[in-house]
Image 1 (cartoon, one colour):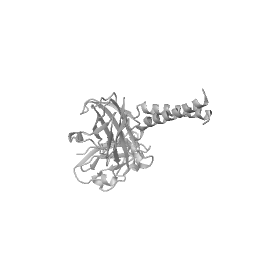
Image 2 (image 1 turned 120 degrees about the vertical axis):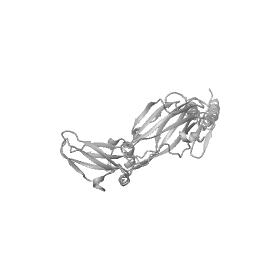
Image 3 (image 1 turned 30 degrees about the vertical axis):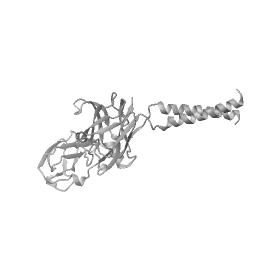
Image 4 (image 1 turned 90 degrees about the horizontal axis):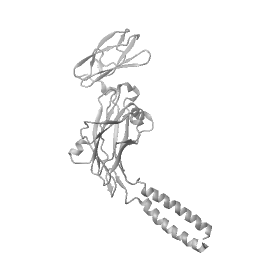
Length: 127
Length: 191
C-alpha cells in the first residue's frame, strides 16, 4: 500500500465515522410511527333519491337582480315531480317559491344555478 | 512519519471504521417500530393509538382500523369525527405528530380529497375534548405534518379530535361516486 493510498483510506474512514456518528446519535432512531388507514367515498346520486318518509318544505328566496333561473334538486326529489332531477321550476327575479322535497330520512340539498354560473345552495334538514 | 507507520495507521483506522460504522448504522438497539401484525420495541418511544371504543375494550387500535367512517359522504352532510387517544408507550418523553401518506396523486380520488375538509384539534389531556386548539383545518390533500403541542412523557396520553366533512360549497357533480384511501401516520419522536 502506497502512502498516498493509505492517506486516502484514512480520509475515507474519517468521513464514514463522522456519518455513522451523526446518524447514530442524531435522535432519528428514536421514532415510532403507527399508521391507520383511512378511506373516503362520495355517495352516488341514485342513492340520494328517497321517496319514503315525511315531506319537507323549503322556501328558497332568490337573490335580487337575478333573471330567470333554473332550480334543480341535487339529491332528494320534489314530491310533485317524482323522479326528475332536471329543471323543476323557472322563477322570476326576487320570487320566492315553496318547494316540497321528499327527502325520506335524509337531508336534501336544493341547488339553484344562477345565470352568471354561480350556485345557491339550501340544505333542508332531515325530519 | 515513515511510510510503514502510515500503512499501519491506515489498517488500524480501517478496522476502527468498520466497527464504528457497524454500530452507528445498525439501529437495532435504538429503534422501535409498529406494523399491522407485529411490534418490535426495544427502547426509546412507542406511540399507541386508541379510539374511545377500543380503549374501553382495553385493546390498542391496531393498524388496519379505520378511525373515521368516511363512506357515502355528501356535500353539506354532517361531519364525521372521532377522538383519538395517543399513548406514549415508550420509556422516554416524545413529541407527537400527525401526517398523511399514500394519497392518490391524480384522478377523482385526489379531487375528492381537495373538496373535503379535515379538521385536527388538540384536546391536550382532555379525553372528552372539552377544551381544544385547532392544529389544521383544510383539505386533506394539502395537509403536511402537524405537530401536537408540548412533550408527552412516557406513559402519558394526549387526545386529538379528527373531523372529516364535505362543505356544501365544494359540491361537484364530477365527484359523485369518487373514492380515495390514504393513511394517517401517528408518529412519536424522542424529544
